[in-house]
Amino acid sequence: MSMTISSSSREAILTAARRAAQMHGYNGLNFRDLAKEVGIKAASIYYHFPSKADLGAAVARRYWEDIRAALNAMQAETTDPRLCLRRYPEMFRRSLENGNRLCLCSFMSAEYADLPDAVRHEVQTFADINVAWLDTVISAIDQASPHNTGRASAIFAAVSGAQLMARSRADIALFDEIIDSYCRSGLLG
Amino acid sequence: MSMTISSSSREAILTAARRAAQMHGYNGLNFRDLAKEVGIKAASIYYHFPSKADLGAAVARRYWEDIRAALNAMQAETTDPRLCLRRYPEMFRRSLENGNRLCLCSFMSAEYADLPDAVRHEVQTFADINVAWLDTVISAIDQASPHNTGRASAIFAAVSGAQLMARSRADIALFDEIIDSYCRSGLLG
DNA sequence: CTTCGCCTACCTACCATTTGGCAGGTAGAT
DNA sequence: ATCTACCTGCCAAATGGTAGGTAGGCGAAG
Image (cartoon, rainbow over all chains, first blue to last red; front, side, top):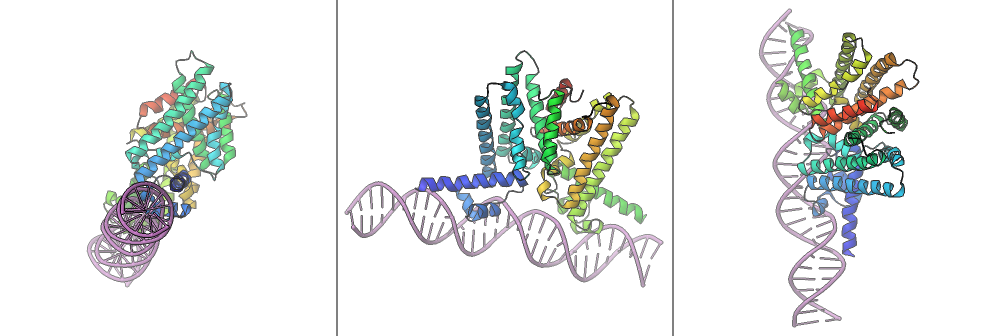
């Protein structure tokens, strides 16, 4: 089926691009390596994505779509918001487990100055989705606090920072240790 | 004095490289732009630094040397460790104020996979120095706790994460809000 | 059934630009 | 003469992108 084959290459490109960008960032994403990974030629990528910026935006968009689905699945699976909060950092840990990779949108946040606008927008959407989700979970624990949104942003930022620090020395145990400290201090607890 | 002129260009290169790398990372650091900024030609940089990796390592090293000096100066100026803790995030805020720049070593941490070993080593030293300093400050507040080092790492990571998030939308107020949440939760209290 | 036109999903060949680096050279100071 | 701190000119490699082409599948028409 031509429809299946088309979806297959486009999907393969998105998957390979995500993996590459989590390791090397947007700037380090290049068509020739990508194409080789997928088993096509570099210029063929233009058939599916008109420019690198379009590819970058599509990758970042798929990333938050997948993360949103995973967050919602976690929430559907557990009625305990405290457990959700405790489990949230696992998503970030999984990238580290996967070859010491960084959250795609953290990497792109660092590269903010050089990002095309469309990519920036998707990166910001990712953060918004995480903060909104955390806000929901925190509010289920304590509906009365006027600081829930601020705390949600703080948790997101803190977990991102923990991942970045663990990446800088390829040390997952450090990530775990930092998360424990967040729990101990009450930020994540 | 030829010694002075030599120091002047080398220093100018280091300064320009730091500014550029805080905006564009190691990967985005390039000799032609750098040289233009300094007022020399790109190939002249090789006179002072034999390779890009040497330049990168020298920049990162100067960065932590300067930060260490600033941290120690803060500590010398104030006998109150709680005040030191509250003031610590100011250093990160200043980079944001300076054109929405990121901490050099945060950017390079993201780029970990593509860093020359010598640069990686300097990046890790930066984190070590921050954590050690925070550990000192925290231990002056509570010497008995067995978790001070973990907490020091957590504070460093959290503040780095706050800066990264603020950069992703060029929003210093967000940085402030997140730092407030850390204080409120007790992580930075 | 065959042929044709259209579409999809690639390919080849090439381009301009950018980048780290190299080799050889020079001006000025001592 | 020697040394320092540059410069010029060039190179190979890498990169996003363009233009033109092709093979195969499919549906419609004869």
